[in-house]
Image (cartoon, rainbow, N blue to C red; front, side, top):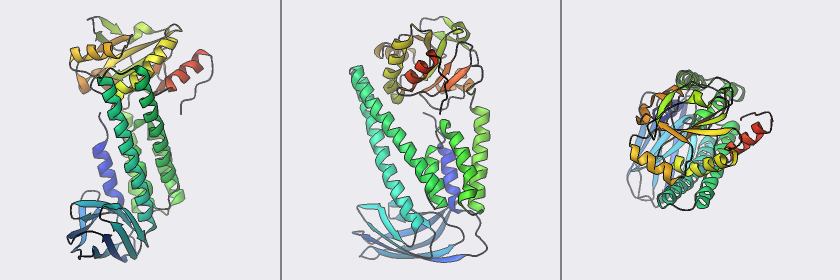
Length: 382
């Protein structure tokens, strides 16, 4: 899947490279890592365009070290302990960091509330990421083994639940932390998700109410503006707009146009046989299709495959009984570009008039939205 990896790296890099305030502060970082053998210890300030070396030393046989430097505004720093690395916030003049060599990132930092907040966030982030990755691997294995749909659906439901819970946690930390570097670092975990751009806009707008204006805050808000402007150019159609028409070739060689389905609710479903999250999500799409296919609803699958045989095999194996089209150009698909698709699975729900009424429906959200629309209820997608 595509993501905004380079953008996130650049954003995180700006966290502490903002210009120093009018009053610089000297800081001393005393460290003690239980069980760490003598080795090099390096402190680096993460810069917007560069990484700046602040200080370096060698730890003693007790795992102790001392680093010092000057900082203007609180920022994000990287502490390199030999081959291991941890992130800290320099926001105090006397910081006493304690950890264990087996789990150096699980530290406490007396004198640095930002570091303690960051360590707690990183611990939960790492654990959640490992759990979700494990579930994705399980879902992929079940698909490969042609496991019953009920098993795949159960795993996907668990994955969706964990993902939603973690996203809520990221927002809670970002919205409530008293450390600006931590707030920005935490929220960066949502930057690769285009569906969170509205939240990012609101979040950036509220920063000036929570923190005193400084260079870091200003540069971050500028970056969010750039991100939104960039997305505006590549995001494709939005909710409320008419879905752009297109024509692609089906598996049996027929030309199929989106406009041919005018008068029905249509889910334009972007996926690929090689995409594990897509394959794990397919049982949910199948369930919605079977429930509503007789109620003026259909699906048009748009594959980002390049291999027609693998595309066909996945359609058959996952029992996707609707129309499927592709230009077999992978990420170079003209329709994916037309709709601003940067990651899959992705989908657009189009009403009988041809207008987009919802996007990126996962899990049971598709069934909920279709139930609401077919019952004449007002739809408000969050």
